[in-house]
Image 1 (cartoon, rainbow, N blue to C red):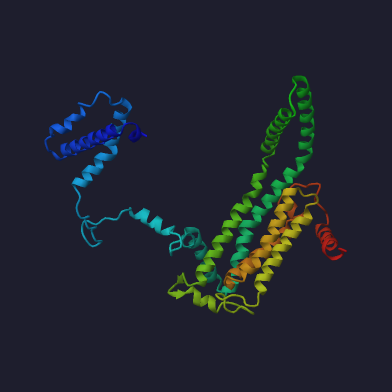
Image 2 (image 1 turned 90 degrees about the vertical axis):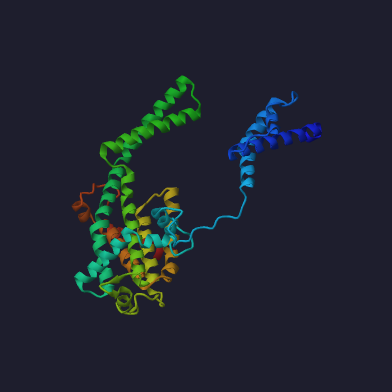
Length: 389
């Protein structure tokens, strides 16, 4: 636009800018300024002030480094070799280690970082200690470790989960009563103050959240506490699986002997080699069937499920079926652990339905409890899957 309106003046401006940057470069080099560079102060009267300011900024930030680089142009310096004394890494040691640990697609990927993490190393030490203490073959050591972890860690957490859920269920009549009173008060206020339906609904929701939260605090039974089992059991399952994977690929040694070689002869029945895949698919299918049984027992226990609970149940069913082909692609040692863990989960779910065990764990009685839980469960299972027309 400037070249079309003032073509000659634009040429003069370019020349003035070039002389200005040349003068700055000469001043940095220690050379005396020529008289031509002082013409910058004797600028023409027609030069608009905004352009002058713009060129000052451009000349100071962009053009001056370019001129200095042109004056100092030469062959690029050679990078020092790693063996020279002046060589130093571009990143500190901890940064280079972190970068190599998360490098995508390489040997230091995220999975390798997980395989070398402290929790996985702890799971490996636990398995090796159980194997050395019991003297069992590796299939027995895996079963013993799984049963011990399930009994010492997940069973108390599962009992605590049922304890919280029972207290929340016993609060439902009180919550319904409060909801009815709050609804009446909000309706009266909305009629008196002329609230819209949206304002009345938001007021109702805000007051209900506050009152229900006070009830949870009073009885110390916030529903989020029931999720502690998931946050403990899922990482433990992952760490144990990765530890067995390290054993199966020969990434861990014990007392000079490769654990992989011990696993290769530590199987039983149709899977004597725990480092190989189960070609019969008996273990993978068993894992999927037991997981589906756990899901169906939970579904039969819930009489009236919400839409979210129905979607969650269908999702877990899909994951249980998907675990079958996944289990067929991993070593038998991992599938054996998955099978034992799922079987222990099924046993815990059945045990926590027993009235005597619930009383032993001091789980409060609820309206949904039954004196004959196993008979009711079998009747519901028979009506849903066997006598279904």
